[in-house]
Image (tube, rainbow, N blue to C red; front, side, top):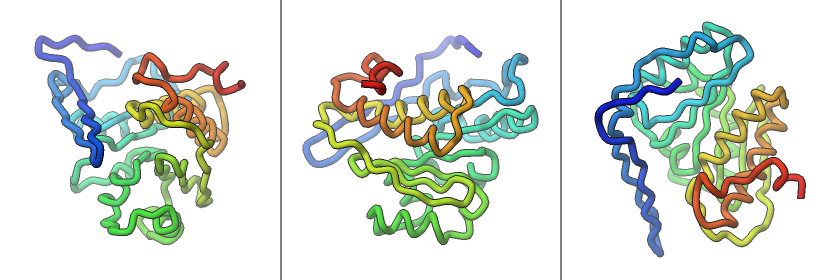
Length: 212
């Protein structure tokens, strides 16, 4: 579904400094995206959402996609504090470490604390939640099972777009019929490979790269 607007294209700027990373969201025409799914969306399809659209738009799209039998994966970047919970609308909710900390009001963002929270937080008992952890890989809760997927040891060149790579690969694997836990492991591997190259979308790994 493509909608062309008359305003500036939405831009998500990442400023990586020596001791901190700053993110700037300039939504542009993303704020004008309608809550309309393509008529061709069918049961079994996968809808991938993110928070550069207005929250109400994504929330509406998620519910409509579920009504049609599609699966919804929602990447909550950039994170927003809102009353409604994405876990109420999506089959899978994807966070990075800092986003999950804000979501659960955690001060300790260690792998162990996040793993424990996924096991015990009542809010998460009925949903599927995936938390990406940079060099520590991924922790997920899927169908009640909590597991850690360690990242492959690589030399990081540029981490820009690694989260997008993970989300895209996860959704693509689900659409191909890959079981969700296996899809999460494949997406983690793809995201790990993506940081070994400078750039973002243009250097995301192909399937052939994962087979090497």
